[in-house]
Figure 1 (cartoon, rainbow, N blue to C red):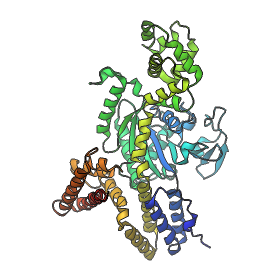
Figure 2: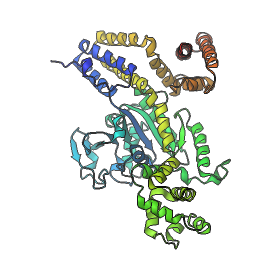
Figure 3: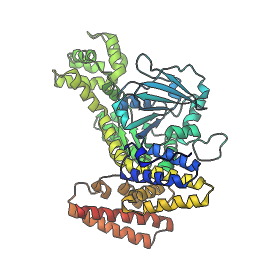
Figure 4: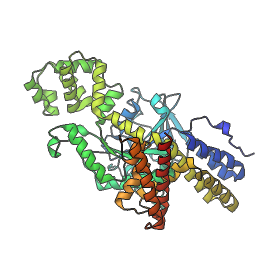
Length: 519
């Protein structure tokens, strides 16, 4: 007897009303489709109620795993090159801390974390038979966020390169002549609403290609218009003199470089944000101790000439003759690097009575992690409902298209059209339009493409209109003016493909106008 999911089966973990509407559609249609299609609908329902998923990708040695540890707030992802760094690892919430090695044939092997609370460096399994790793943590951060750590591009290991490129959609599987990801990689990134792409000082051609492929791969499933944020990691290693206008300030140099990289990666990313992953990891994961704070306070007592000399290089810092033992200084260097050490000592000199906790918070502020988290919230969490609902509809549509029953296919498509015709479902139309524009499927003049991206790229009306902080009457007038312009463009001058997008944007402006008048 076929199992039919009911509305009461849902555990109220849906992202919002759009996800709930799609879930109800799946529940309602299960009794009207074949067993195979119904099984697919149950998988869609499971994904709809899953936490927001962020896939972290980038080149080898870009500091991806360090950033993963910072986001989770725990030293759990290995940062040294080893077996585990060659595999996709999914960090998700669980009631019992454990590691599950998932094999290509679906088998699982459960392992404990090592003595330091990290994924074991050696798995003691046939590595070639492993698909990926699932890491479960009783960590509050992971209750509404699953973090996916991916192997690095540029690895010297050919197998890891192939695995990562297939994961990112940058290479086709050897036996496949399609643009789709292989099954293992598709499972690894299934449901990823956000791509956090890690770059360092130079954006290379393969960075752009991999990001484009990864974005296209996830967008085709998620219908996400802006499903990627990039971070400029290791911002503290940028030489200020190499960036015009930095005025000798490291963070200002990093911010200017990030702005330049954002233009290079546009429109594949919503933003490029500078961050110091090592500093964030140390401050956020419990790596900064009272002993570290005491050592920094001792260093703060050195005279300026000596201190300036010690900050010239890591070698001088660890070998210079002073009262703080060389081993202690080496530990500080591994946790904070020279920039972080300099920031910490400056903070102590400004406030000699700083506690270890207060100093840790200052280091966290200096890392830039708070801005990254805020951007993730603004770009992805705020729109998770629409993104998840669009992803689910894409899956439902694909299941219907794969069905050999023409009547079943028509019933599903009719139900989807009824759902999309509702005014409250317009966000799904807008996400679809954004996907068409950002993927290049619909060519638009640059200024119009930027406007489409802006209107659909935020949940804040001021940002949608590009008029943050302006009086409401100005927002009302502008929304109505742009609604009229896009309606005219859809009717006169647009290609048929552009007209589809233009009608959606016109409707978006009109709904904004209505909302503003209602408020």
